[in-house]
Length: 393
Image (cartoon, rainbow, N blue to C red; front, side):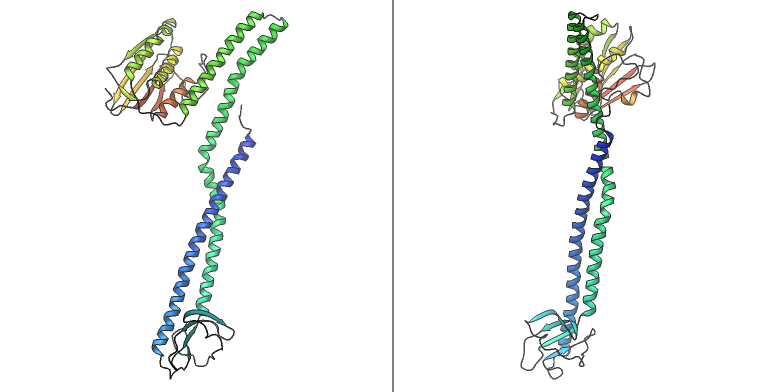
């Protein structure tokens, strides 16, 4: 009863992890690309601003047309370079700052100024080093972006494994749940099939006996289907209403309704409640919870034992507890008794869904169900719920 085959489950998990990892790596790559583009734009603006400032200083310093008629080329410190020849064509263009490339001088930063007679027209300065540094910076940014995206892939795969671990556990648990439910339904179907085949073959089972067996097993399957429906509704994520219920009144009704069953088993039922205790829960829901708990307590109580239902208030919490004098629960079974279909070593029938349904209802109401027990000392199941405005009414 493994539900999904292990290799199929593992393949689905790996596929999901890789999808999450690839999407994460793409997101990281895009973010790094945007950051790199922004850093490059800022750096280029800074380089261009530095070159522009150098040219403006040269204009202010060597603006006399008698020094350089028509054009001026300065070095990194703003000093004139009279030995460099002006190539025809590079100084043409619109007014303002720009970068040009010449075969003789390489990259130049050029500042084109309005012509004033024979005054200064063009100022230029070599920009090879600045542009080379800018190119290297761009290459570093590209390398970091690619490396970051590639590194994000294995890191994302590992992190996806951690993020998907709860989902993986939930899928495994649901798969096992489906397998257990199928097994629970398969058993009565097998009994019906066997009874019908024996009756048809006339091998020790009459038709009436086969019909009785079929009816009994059908009722068992109906009860199981009802329990599964109740569990599904209890686990549903729909928003819980803000209704209030008096736990004392609900407990009184539950005890009264189950008294005949308790007397038949030789078990006493007692209610210990000081007065009205209000909790934020629907009356029918808390009635289902208490009924399941009391039925379990009666089932496991010896003749002459007493099952006690206690209702108390503690600050902002309303507490209902059901205690019995039964054989108790072993330490091995205690962590699992509220799991669906789990039946311990002292199981006495049922489907193992009562506590699972009760816990789901309580947790849906932002409450908590706890079980305290030890072999030979009975069991206490405590349900804690948010109290109404005033827990005592």
